[in-house]
Image (tube, rainbow, N blue to C red):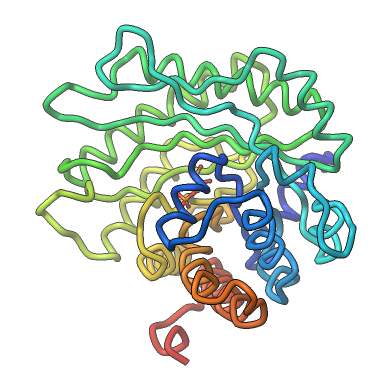
Length: 338
Ligand code: 13P
């Protein structure tokens, strides 16, 4: 077992998953403003530090993805944030893309940037304590405009390949995140077909970039109908379609899959992950790398009294425990309500 393979397994084994707190300052400002909290450097750190020092970090969180601002900050106990995270046994990760920018001559599609100078930034992040990284490619579905375009799939998958090779060269596990967005009125079959194309191109690009597939974590979307689709389907059906798509289009060497929540509610993201694990016949670890679906309730609780650290941590602990049970197929509505 290589060092990077064992880091990937450490992050996702035993019902653990990833806490994605790598919102850029722009995104974090939107999240904080939505609960009427000013987005200051201090508030962003206070909320994040509150989560990182919660009890559930020990048993539920194998890795934390940070944003550039946070990895360079110190906690109130004067430890660096990576030191605080490693106290609970979790691994520090870092978002290394610089965001999704308009794809030239495209119809409202994006290309994720950040490859220029990446080798030097990776070295800096390694020295700050990061042992895994994240890069998100974004794929938008539009039936009317025939999206995603061939160009968007090719360009974003190519960037994922080059990023992953650089991350492994720097001795860090790349989280490969090709996100097919939920926005739109497309049905579940369309999501399935687009995700299939995106996964095929992504793994093709990883292979021609010589990326070792047993040293990555895949962070995909679940197979869902678009958020405005009027053909609703059951959670069982979502789990079935997701498992089939990943079983058929992800190479078996990949050690683990950690889903993004992508705008699902906390309960939907938990319920779907639980059913995926109940029926998991793929051989892959199926866990979580949730941003909103781990933080939403905690953020809303905290916003009512930012000094109530204990209450915020209790709220976060509950959510993290529910996600961890779902990652083992052991979650139920009764446990959720207890
Ligand atoms: P969500 O779970 O909120 O989709 O965030 C995950 C993530 O890291 C997006 O890049």
